Length: 181
Image (cartoon, rainbow, N blue to C red; front, side, top):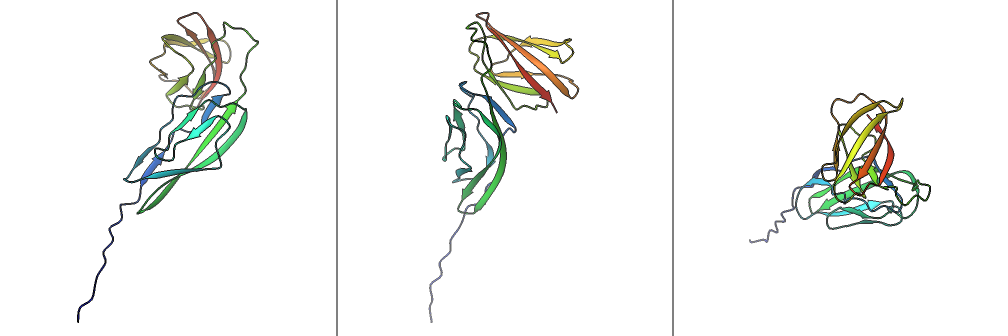
């Protein structure tokens, strides 16, 4: 007697899916592409619910990109990474804040994330070189420095609320409230 055997080899299920979270963006300001960290092969991605207007989700890479066009309250999104071996999920929190300003064309409009942060923040909406000042809520200057690409690193900050002031090479400046976890 003979019989046939079919062997199916599935990939190992993806694991280690993470995104920076929470993410706080500013409406009408292009965001720096946000790419997940994940391990595995043959992965496709999905997100639920749909992202705020103007933001895109790439099902092949899991990348979040675009320019949010409407204010959106803090919302938890579930990202799922799937392959033939299974799936893994990660919850990411995204908020789109209204664009602040007084119609001043010399104002630098930029976004900061993650916010709250631990030791650094990513900034988007700044081209070229820029400087920053970190100011305590009582008005005391805490730190000054140079924006390194799209990263601002802070050393030894206590937990608290701060004001981040950024000035671009063309003299435009703007401020954002940031929170150290």
